[in-house]
Image (tube, rainbow, N blue to C red; front, side, top):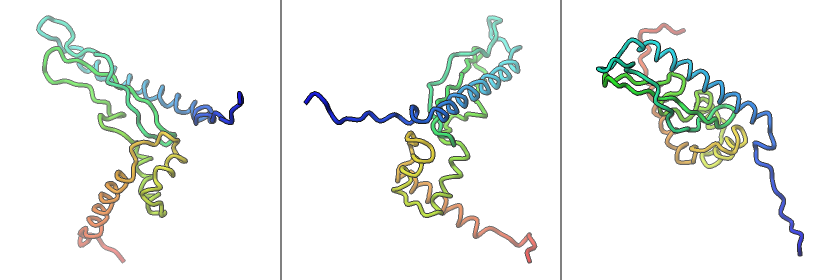
Length: 169
């Protein structure tokens, strides 16, 4: 009995090197864009000095790495942070990767489409796993139900909007 029947299945990254390459490229591109944003921010405050005559706004490492769900799956993102030595309240906030961004707009748009196509809340995890990779985390049935109630509220607001100022045939 020295032989076993266990077959090692490749991970999605191993079985699809193109997607892995795209995710790595997206991660590098996001990092470059956020660094350019930071350089512009620091240049805007380069003349601001603290009480010792040093630059007041300086780089101060990175925020913890986090994952953002994109159209090509999860991408690890790390945003730099700054320190304000003058205590004037100046802080860097990336416009590309806002502080609480979990999913890109394309994924946010995909969710209602899947729901309208008839995917049940319990099947979203499997459907998104097939579309975005197995790492499609944070989209449990409870999350989908919560989003569904938001969509319902938006729909009800939209149906009751005032159309008296518009002319329709």
